[in-house]
Length: 546
Image 1 (cartoon, rainbow, N blue to C red):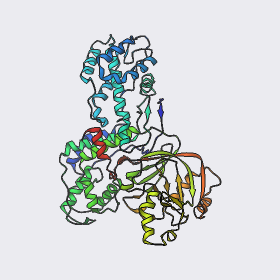
Image 2 (image 1 turned 90 degrees about the vertical axis):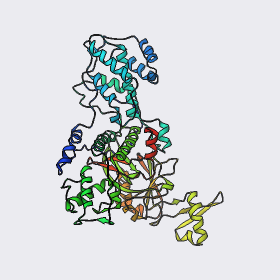
Image 3 (image 1 turned 180 degrees about the vertical axis):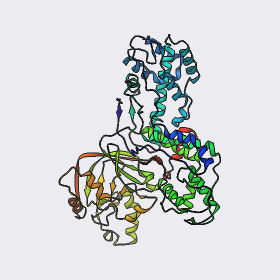
Image 4 (image 1 turned 30 degrees about the vertical axis):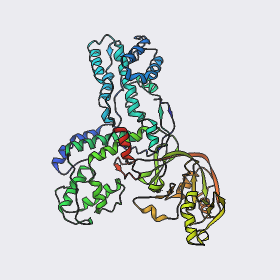
């Protein structure tokens, strides 16, 4: 299937599908059968595959597009889509053959009618007219209806733009999202679908980042959970933390809550903190990005009190972000997910390894964008940005006359009344022993750090905007693996030489810095993270109105 796409895929290619099992409390188990059935479905929607009309006998007059758009003016923005699609087909009907309306028309209508399943809050334009035309088209099977033909194609393009492309670029950029937006030739995509051999087309791989479909399944699950449970009573604790062998009525509440969230599978009536609960708590804490110690403290209870309605909102805004991303990349690339505090290293969308990172604090937010990593710099100097010189270095110099020498720094000149300061290479250099440069206007790059203890914190927003990497030597080895000069020993020596050395990569490596507070991991588990830059609520208001 050929899709015209400009740009390349950022991040988080978590591809394993999942199956969640429920057991234990019978009443809860029975109430969740529909949820289980959702998970048994294949992840891609099978909405338009089949024996499409490949006939080249039944045509319509191109002027009918003009009259159609006059009658249905809300589709005027799709003028070029409609004309290009039918020009390529030489104005042959797509949704009719010699026997009348093809079955797949109904599949498309079902998809359009259930657009809320895509995480969208919009009513398809002319939905009543579509239903009426469809009914007439099925009654009069031997007479192709050009109005219905054009209505179906217009509804497809309207759906595709909304579900697969998302909000206007101005929305994403207003939220400081500067990763290039994908562009898909939807007319070519539909044309390819219609021309596909139905025996070869098993599922539809829609032109949208794969996390979108994974999140959509969990959206259905949380909606069902919200419908069945209604209220989501707050769990309160009367001690700093519950640990194994503790006993409390609150523990039974926590067990039931974790059961509903698919983390606990034991007896939900027991008030004893047993081994099963500790295992479940650790699993839950891991997918929430908390310290997975198995103890139930305030931080863990606080996340358990987040209602399905709030999780639904979180899923919706992250599905919207998925619509913005390019689709696929057949080479090495790096991806940083800011709220997850993780760097992921990929080859052809397969995750090779991950490590912790430190990102910008709220005052110095790490920018969401993409670039091409071009240089590895061993034993780097740190050229201190003027803002840090002004706000931190100069005040420190005023307090201590030997501040510069004590911190292995030097003044190389003056500019705008400020000293130009750089820190010499060495183990205490703020950039550590190596940095990774991908030229960009945001002055952001990846680098080592002497402050190793910060990588063990559960929340790691401490930097001035750049991304500190917990395993910089491993990253250098990965980036230089194709260069015979740069063996592991050579890399180690260069990192500890005390002399700055630039190495230009033989081939640049894409880097994507993104922002996802909900994602599905390699094990098929839904993960949620704290919205550290407070972007979810603003996006929800912009695209959903609440």
